[in-house]
Image 1 (tube, rainbow, N blue to C red):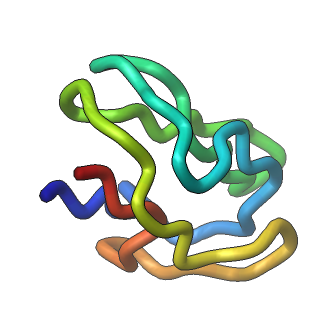
Image 2 (cartoon, rainbow, N blue to C red):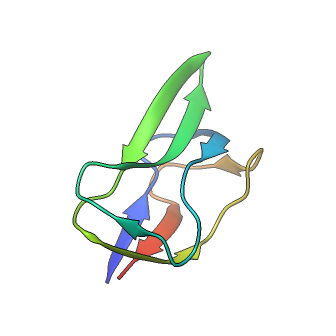
Length: 70
């Protein structure tokens, strides 16, 4: 099980996956917006999205868990 964490503080601009979806290593899961820049957060390995811990528009801090991939 992998916890995909925010690499920096920012707002959740877009969630590009849904629970139960199969993902591949490097696939974008969440896009954060910080200082008018879009920061994609990618899967670290192949797996299935088990849980999405945030919603679009949420503010997150660095190291907050965004998605759990199993």
